[in-house]
Image (cartoon, rainbow, N blue to C red; front, side, top):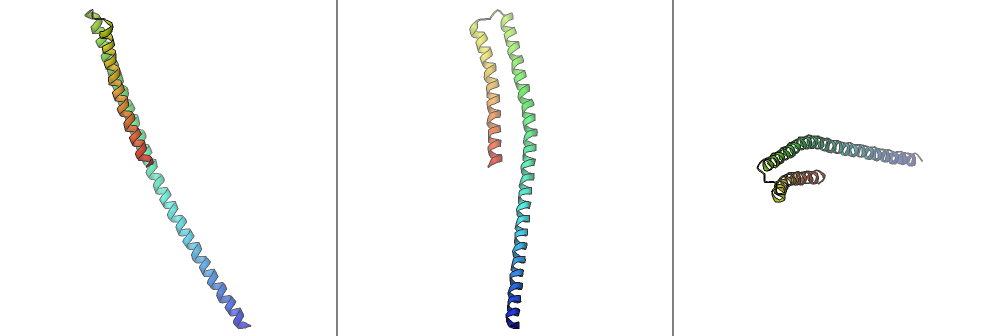
Amino acid sequence: ENRIIKGIEDKSNIIADEMGKERELLSEGVDQLTNVYESDYKKLSNNLEQESIERAENDKRISQIVTNEVKKLEEVLLDLRQHGDTTDKSLFDAIKSTVNEIKVTLESEKNKREETHDNMIN
């Protein structure tokens, strides 16, 4: 009878040890995953912050380009009026040229932002 009790106690101790080891492994795994997630979150947060700064700078740059192009257009239209060359074609060409410059600038920025977005999510 003592041998049976001793055997049960031994088995109970072995099971308790195994359960303790499993808890430790689970705890280590959770800690490792938490560290990975925190690291990834910090990287993503830093990337988003940097992208926001760059986007704001690019928005200012684009705004300045558009403003400059509109000023050029105003000057060209004024020059055309002063020289009497106000034909529909000359006015259309001046406006078309300015719109194309603005379109190229905006399209270029759109492509950069799409590429940045794709790089951030992949």
